[in-house]
Length: 277
Image (cartoon, rainbow, N blue to C red; front, side):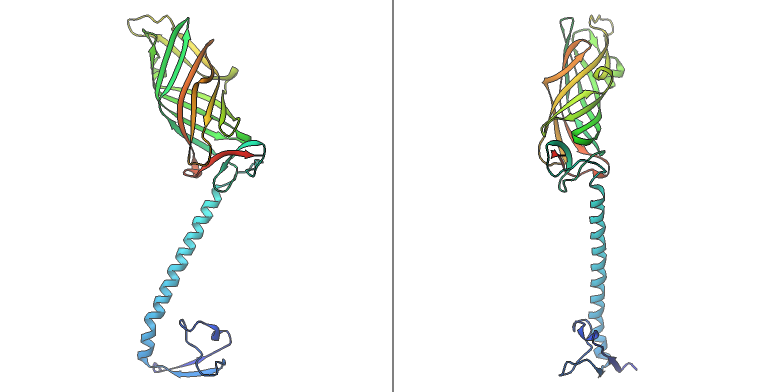
């Protein structure tokens, strides 16, 4: 039984590539009933090649399924249930790149370096800084958004004899709303009553007297520059000359730079501010 094999060839089988299955042989190339003697040696010589082809096709199917899964995963995250359009227009919107799909409701986060605050109280200069700060927020429709600044490791430099209380030295939280005015400028506004961002206190150092001591609210608006073009990290820069903030009733300026990126499932994806509807 091992020494002889009988093949029956149909029309469809005759179209099978010859290097995979040899079915029809003969000079007339017509499909029909073909009987062929195949020795055990001949069959054994073909077996390794057929097993190699089988293994290759199995690996190919595995790789193909993996690629399709990756593509599907990449498609799931983009886009939001939003009226925003990233296909051109007169408004400012947040979009993915590539893809040009809106990022409404998506989270962002980032880190900043040294943050500097300067003001005056009773004619005396007030200065304090925070060694670093964190940013977390949510993108809204038509360039809007909201978020939180968390300033860390803060200390008062001026005036002499004054300091921040321990709770403010550890951290200062500031809540804000933001509106992207152009593709390169955004206006941050305190989200509390009367545009309040945060509140803090100034007190006397041990054994000294601080004439500027008291509790103060920080209110108002801050214009920031935003980087243009698609990138994973978008740079946001706050400058003193573009501050419209107040410490109590006195003007206060703020400066700092942060790198903002998409969060959650969108972490690592490039994005940008662009014109849309």
